[in-house]
Image (cartoon, rainbow, N blue to C red):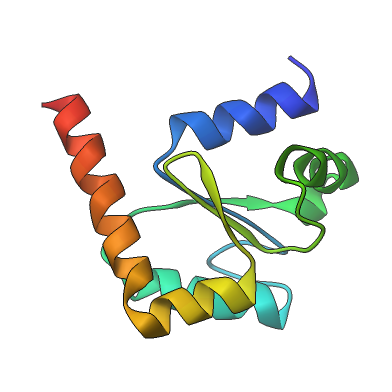
Length: 111
């Protein structure tokens, strides 16, 4: 499996994925930290992928998402955006709705 396939598989198989610099336990940039703080405020589990572990992750991720910056938040297989968009959605209450909808969808698949 090549890097693009691996990235796509991670996005497809997880309800919420955050591609970031560092980890959710130890963010390595302010933007990744800001999104992590927002996501940790919700009771919804998410997968974090450290783009600093392999430069190929970042290159291939940007080709898949057509989004140049990190972090990148995906919910239910769709790119939500980076730090600014995530913070705006959080402040408006839309992010909570998106997460709840994804969780409801995931639960109906499992049930």
